[in-house]
Length: 578
Image (cartoon, rainbow, N blue to C red):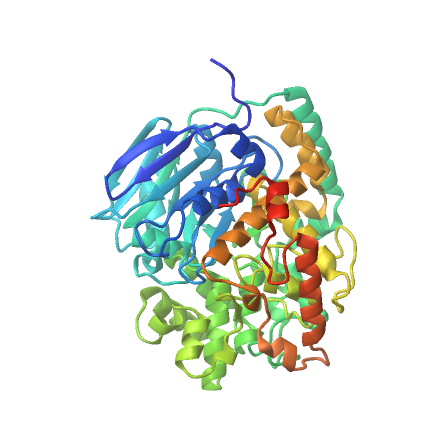
């Protein structure tokens, strides 16, 4: 039997409506062109055609990458792809933990799920044994209890009550402190009556050139250790080290992005204060030397930067302990902390009153239960603000709430929000790195000049990174060349950094075509009017300059003036024209 390297060349397909389970061997060219993770998921979801997000026909695709399951640094991640019920866009999300490595060790590159079970079920995978089992006893339980019950069977990905209740901010939780966040992917899982997936693998991922792999692994580890952002920032403080930086840059959101100076004491939210008060312990994902996650002395998870940023000055809340509790509730109910914080910022603006720590905890629970005002808030800020007659209060793009960076002070990041395929997201291009942390090199955050090109390059880069699937934090110290080298060693397929960038460009274009098919247009590639009209800290984004940059960006992408990929571009990327 021919040895398979890197990829398993097998996709598990499950139709919940028919209780049908089979496997398919993907064309090898698809794996080479889309890698895995986000890319493979995008290809599968795109090829399935138009669906309603909460219909049984919507696909839910969990996909690992060719490096997943090896000991490549920072590669222990897995992606989920679907159509988002919150945004209507194609959507992907990835998380760490052990689910991805177990999936590969069980012998699969991906699991593609369709249909709706007539009764609650969970999927159990142990190598070639795949079964649908009753989840009636699990339905109604939150993510932590569900994981506790199932964890002896393998690595668990599950929804909490938010996903069951159809909350459009619902996430899928894994192991259980890792999150497939944003976009309502948990609501898609809940709409299928699918409570959990448990995966256990006893195999391994074969490596083509073990000696070269070890050489490249050592090279990557040296670069990670040498990066000050990693070894003096993330590794010491976790992501909350960003709070002080964004406060100093005056880009931490205040009062739903309406003010420049916080009217609360921010010191309790700084990483140094958290370190002194909580003595947090480091927690790493599979095969990750960075260990950016933090837990307290009791082993309970502590909030990351985005959660703190959206639940503090953004809603006038000065209580750090309330954010700790709200974060844990979000993780237990299975909800995206960025969107929860953002919709509460919208709620605070509409009612013209801040949100106390006690109220933050109460409202978070109400959103998860979908009761009272929580039922409206759980449909997202765009829905809630429109219903209240204040659409300007919803700080969102394509329906997805913005994260904790005011784009007036990081204009390239703001432009990347507007052009992101999944909506207002900082990780699509991750210009946080060059504009805020000055990595791999510093670029001026206060101008749009040159940002069309920067945005395209970084979007393509991180589309490939999300398909390997590798943590974006590794790229504070490592570049495409190092990961292309180790990918070559693992798979035996020669890749260069240019090849990876081409893969990313291909993925970006197929996602764009999906959204265009769903009715999105260039009019959706725009920032909320607040950032184009209202000055904060003396800064505003000039509308005409933004539109000129958008036109330049379309040209650089090989799209027409309406943001539609041209036939020439699609042919160059090997994307079918149908």
